[in-house]
Each structure stands twice: as structure tokens, then as C-alpha cells.
Length: 316
Image (cartoon, rainbow, N blue to C red):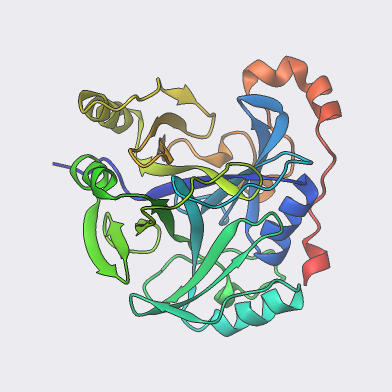
């Protein structure tokens, strides 16, 4: 039987100041802003999408920037660290680049035989860069970061949970994931075990629950090819007692949502249709794009949203 889940589609976080958020992910990390739209559930807030050249599934980190939002706290029931994949020989480049912008990093760590560094953005968002030789994706650059050093997309994500059994059962029995290995209390799962599909569970049985606000992840979305496979996985999840939403149209993909047993919000998003349906590929992310239902409110929405500007030239 064909697999319904193909790995990670996107990860969505809550942020603070919109301009600082844009500067960090495009200027410092060098991701492409592939879409500037609104939070469909809170139209007075931006929804930024950062990824590779076309925002391919498995590369897109998205944010809801709420100006003035207090910082959240990491804890159990949360995705605490988003890991990006970089080339095996790029780690020193990134250590130097982050130091240039006074961003503290961990010492070089080793996990499952691969080297990585860990740091936070200005809101406290947990980020890792994992150097590896198994990622064939070409990455993206605005020109201020050498392409050969650029981020390739996601490597994976860390779920901080009080227990793993029910979450593991969900991943392995219903979502096409397989257990790969355990190391120092970190349990690794993947669909194929390659960058872009890795989910790690770290246990903290007595840990305090995280508080969701700026600097925390709102949800993780998993890939499914199309609406037919999405409806199939929706049916499977519902038959196994999960409270799954109806299909929601997010313009660039369709989504269903549910909470996994440890408390993390999961989404299943379709690969289709992608981000080029309403902008030319060469100009992705340049204009504010609104869903059809919000278009009559454009003037008011634009007035309420803070002005932002792409300024990667300041981060050469």
C-alpha cells in the first residue's frame, strides 16, 4: 500500500515584531520569503512563509508575527527545536555568521553521528543547524550567502513530551513513520530516515508544560500528496479516535488538524497546489496576497498590518 505521509510539510511558529522576524529568517538565515499573506484565522496578523526557491514542501518555516507579544516558554507538549539541514562542510561558516550578528550558539554537538549547533532567534525560537552529507536539495540564496553553504530545508523537529508511547503509536501505526534509533534518551523516527522527514521525541516525564507565545512553535504539518490521500488519512485518524478537523483551504495547500496524545498540534497538508498559483515564481513573496474572502477588506487589512520591507542587503 502506498504511504500517505511523506515527511514534514511545514512548521509554523508564533513571533513578535514582524520586521525583526523577516530580517532574521531572510537576512541572517538566508531563507527566501515565498509568501506574504495573513493568518486566515486572525486577518490582522501577517502569515510569512520562508523556504527554498519555490517553497517546496519540507523547506517552509512559517510565522505569525504578533507585534508586542510576550515571549513563550519551552516545555512539554511542544515542538521545542526546529532543525535545518546544511552541507557537511558548512558548520564553521554558520558558526562565524551567527557570531557576526551576536547570536550565541551552543558548542558543536554530535547526534546520531552528525554535528550540529543549537541557538535561538530574537524571540527565543529554538533552532538547530545539522551538518550532513545526505541532503541533495540545492538550497536557496539571495546572493548574500554562498549557495554551497545555504540551508537546504528542514532536517527535522524535536518534540518534548512527558511520555512517548501513544505518540509513537500514532506515528508508526497511522502516519507511515518508522522507529530509527535511540540515543541518550532521544528517540528518532522517519518515513525514509532522511533530512526533511525526521521527528525526534525527547522525554521529560516531570517537565512543566510550555507556554505558547512568541518564540514557540504553533504546529507542525506533515506532507501528503493530494486531497485524495488527505481524506484517506483523515478517515484513518478519525476511525482511531482522533478529533480531526474538517478540511480547510489555505490557498497554497489544504489542511486538517488534530492534537497528538502528547499535546502537540499536528497538521496534514497537501503538497498541491504550491505557492506559485498567485505570483510569478520570480516574484514570490513580494506582494501581500489575500484569500478571496478577504480581498474586499484589503484596504482595512493593509492599514492595520505593520509596514515591512525585505532588506537582505543589510546582512551581506
